[in-house]
Amino acid sequence: MEENQGNATVQNEVKTKFCKYCGAKIHEDAIICTSCGRQVEELKGAQAQPQVVVNNTNVNKNVNSGRYGSEKNKWVALLLCIFLGWIGAHKFYEGKIGMGVLYLFTWGLFGIGWFIDFIVILCRPTTYYV
Image (cartoon, rainbow, N blue to C red; front, side):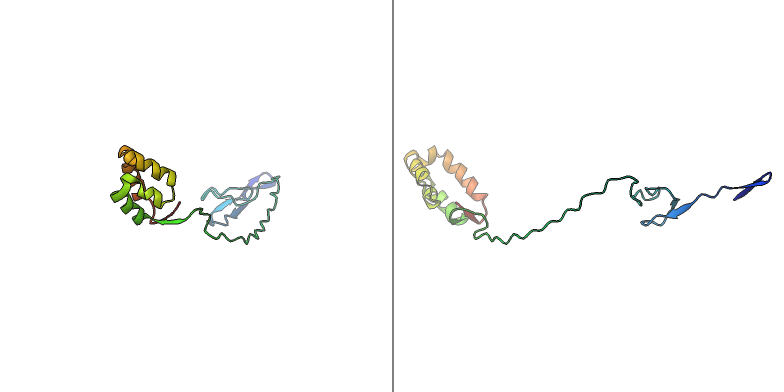
């Protein structure tokens, strides 16, 4: 658009560019698109980010996936807990001899430990490690 002011001609054209994400027409100096809100240009004077190179050459193999102890079956432990839990049979099965002896002499910690162990074993995965 041109306007005549005496002998001088003034141009009021606004220089524009297109957003590389949504294609909207935006001002030439715009850094963020006014339509989609994405950054279309780098900030002037911004510090260059350091380039990070990740060289992962880890070839270690875990034999038992980091699990320690021996593999136990939930259902065997649960049946032992139900029928012989008052004498600590499920504790002996898990290899916890001291707790098994304690259960043996206290009748499953007076029934309270027996009941708690039943719930705990019931919530375990089918194969667990002790």
